[in-house]
Length: 171
Image (cartoon, rainbow, N blue to C red):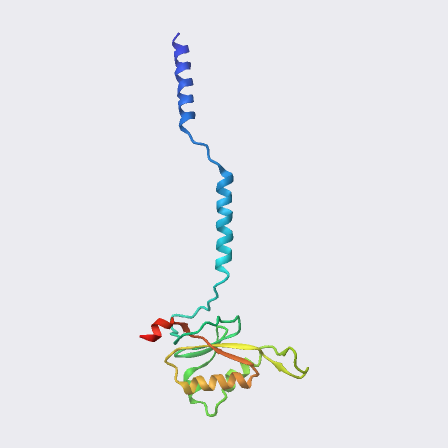
């Protein structure tokens, strides 16, 4: 009799625990996660930013144009770098006579030429270059860097800035 009561008690406990558990519907959970993944993929690809180092403080500007994926020429307080590789120091660039910086031009000439679409076969360019310069860099040095890029046959020279809203400009 005692064995029968233990058996019945265990059976009742199993039934009670089965009533307390809630079944998990995996289909609807997978649907929600799929929608979430697609949403994150679509929204993350619409934003394009160029990472700037902490030592570089870009000037602010009101612009709606997004930066293109181009070679980056960075002018910090100490160095001039092309795609992360140091080309020359700022002191050497400021001390050089003339408007063209020879060390920078030799590195820029390593970028391959491409034919301009819709132009003659002899019309070649290196495309576009993006210059990231600290806001405290003197204009005379920035002018030398831009002239050097022009001499190296870059058709479009862009200057990176921090986006500032038009409300901030009104203040």
